[in-house]
Length: 140
Image 1 (tube, rainbow, N blue to C red):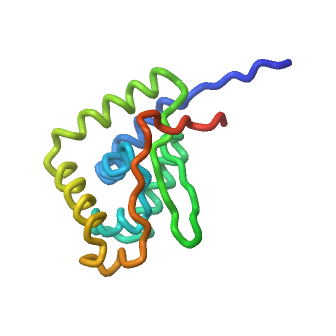
Image 2 (cartoon, rainbow, N blue to C red):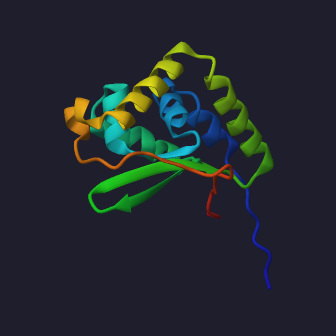
């Protein structure tokens, strides 16, 4: 049986982490699965712009998507490559000290508890907390 070699594209990872909007998205997904409608509301950006950034993160191999009816849910897909995983883990840990990132999390918490206050979130599924182990990135 042939052995499959898996090489993570570190350049793509660093490029994905080099944008503030993408960092804000990762911060909101850290430990939870979030519907795209929450990203639009929390980041106050258009759905097409958010979707482009999410696609960029998916192509870099650090975000996965799941459809549930008309809703798209996104979560962090932890890379299998230990070096890439360490870079992602360090990045996520460092986001906690940023005031804008803290503000985003506070808005997400408020939106989850009181979605009726946000017209765009009425009927949207509440973000689900994930277990300690993040989803592994699929082999390409």
